[in-house]
Image (cartoon, one colour):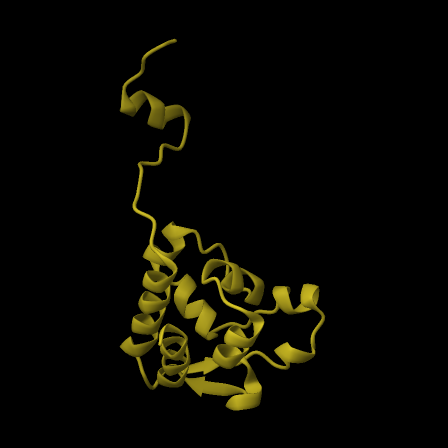
Length: 127
């Protein structure tokens, strides 16, 4: 086995240090706080999540959605949030379709929603 310094390893590979893993509750709490930072920010709702086939629903996304707010956060990104799709949010935040529908679907709010409304929906899951 050849021993190398950390600097030598950085030259040939991406080196990641161990990090703490947030619990589901911590991830949801952080998402709610991110949404509450700009409570009047208008966010895009996803259209008809309850009517889509699971594969199509999982690929749904929208620029400026509540999920996009989570993806913009470097902490949640480092914790493993890979993109701003419905399916990825469901996986990462460990949500049911019903729970995520309550947060992002247009049927409750129309085409856009205020970030404060999305934050309330995330917090309702924590209660």
